[in-house]
Image (cartoon, rainbow, N blue to C red; front, top):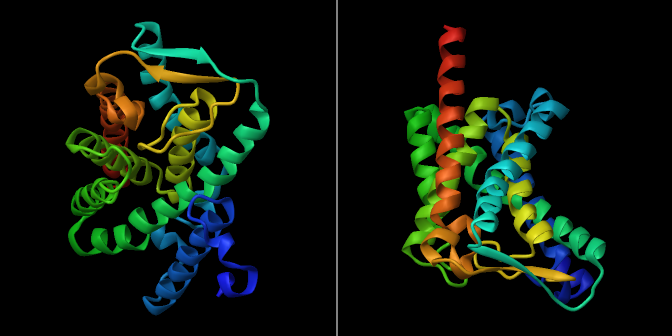
Length: 250
């Protein structure tokens, strides 16, 4: 409908308007299904309390710190290298990355860990919801450029990481903030590929010089063992925090 009114150019999947339209569509789908199921937004971790600034900030910091730690370790060991490129507008490129990655991250969180996660959790428990959605999350990236078995497995681990944030905080906003910050650190700060999709390289870019199994190769750092190791540390922390919270509620 938007394409008919505003022209098909607005539906370019790589463009900013398309990302926000896609997010709007999944928000509308949630609004419909929550009313069909007679549930509030809290059912999917989108209640008012779940949007508190501390949760959003902590989620963003966790996402940025996890991929940032792995990337800094790779840079320090010369497995990644920053090299200059043609001069450009860094702030403009960073802003465009944010405007694209923000709706994309929250779309994926709603689509994978929103209503579907909540229904699976209600039907079979949080472990079933976490496993099923994480595997689906990984498989949906199989069509990204340069995807292979290792990168898909790494994205499945990322699904467990983001799902653990949702469980530990009870906030899908926090998981979305972590997802966005993770991607922006790679695209906006490092100027390196995100899930196989090239990012802007205004002023500089980061290239991998180590083995692909460690650095992620053309997929980007999130597809390598360094990022997977960092995610496992965060998952164990969040898992322990969630279980501790369950015990306290009992």
